[in-house]
Length: 282
Image (cartoon, rainbow, N blue to C red):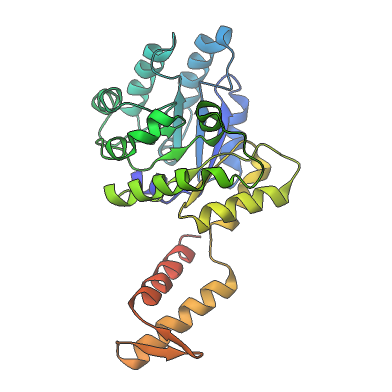
């Protein structure tokens, strides 16, 4: 079941203290849903939020449980221990994954993995310079299947003030992509687009993430999900080009060839194969 989270494009946040939104989240086209115990829940509501999550989880189907992650409060917060106990219990009932907020150190992540059922994936949310420094170690913790980038908190921690293009974060995003590759993980998940009214910004952010080696994105509203899913799939033109490359390669019997005046060698072939495989995930 972890293959669901490895291949997911859209991850929709739902506040844990709003259980009525969980059913709505599963009715949209999000590949995965994240119940948020952290930022979306006020301190005085943390206990009730955990209770809502435990109650709502019991009514989910097996597939819905496998598509669900829980974002816990950060290590060192007053709510961390209770969050972890609940998620450990849910992991033995089919919970798909745990997204630890502000992941920075290896040992706490290892302890989380040990507390979870073996089938429960870990998706560390990297939100700080320390997390960036420890990317390779975090990526190699057992049960980690992907890394996620909390770019807003990272900017604050690093003292950055990015504009909409976020050029300052290019090397950070690349670091997540390379660490994922070195650890043999699925490509990482990019952060949220906060402007719910600007579909063009959402598309720009998602396409930038895809060009930069990411294969998924966090969403904060159902209206963002379809756009994110589309952005991380090959366009009809890209798919047609890839299929032509594969057909030409087969017809030539392998080796380097020329198509439309351009050389087709092993890297071009691999890219075409990847494009066709992505399209098959629709």
